[in-house]
Length: 190
Image 1 (cartoon, one colour):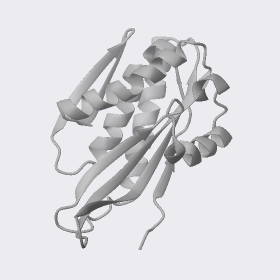
Image 2 (cartoon, helix red, strand yellow):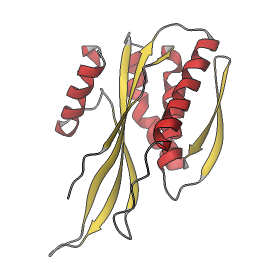
Image 3 (tube, helix red, strand yellow):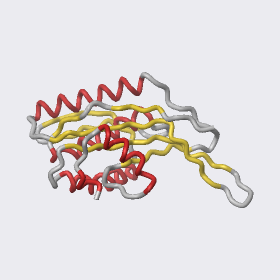
Image 4 (tube, one colour):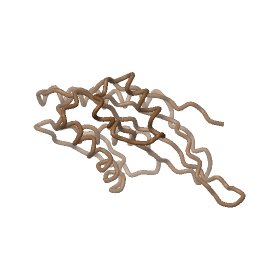
């Protein structure tokens, strides 16, 4: 039985293009802190152009590296002149399913976070305010609904990032949805 995932839409986050990578990582790790299961919680502090933001993080070296690698091409595209963009963070459980000939993994997305960004030159005070607003919003949304129960013993927590720079049919539906919500420059989809 598949259930529709809980959808969370954050307010657009106004930041400077050069701060996208640090801000996006902080936002993703903040969401994972509220949702990740069986991970180590590490207090983090980021400093961006005089902006000091502290946030709670549930990260491992592997997750940090994965997130950084996924966001890097998007950072390059943003420096090409984008005025806005978005990220979708999907949270799921991978559950082992016994089959006749081989065992497979079934993935069930239970929560999806839409994270829109708008770019403009801002003061450090404005960026700090935008990030604090977003982190507070994440905390409120996360606390307003429960973490999905593990479907079975052996299920593992999984997250995935969908970006406008992604290619392939599996992201087409999400890309079309976000095009309606956030006006994303066409060059990010090429």
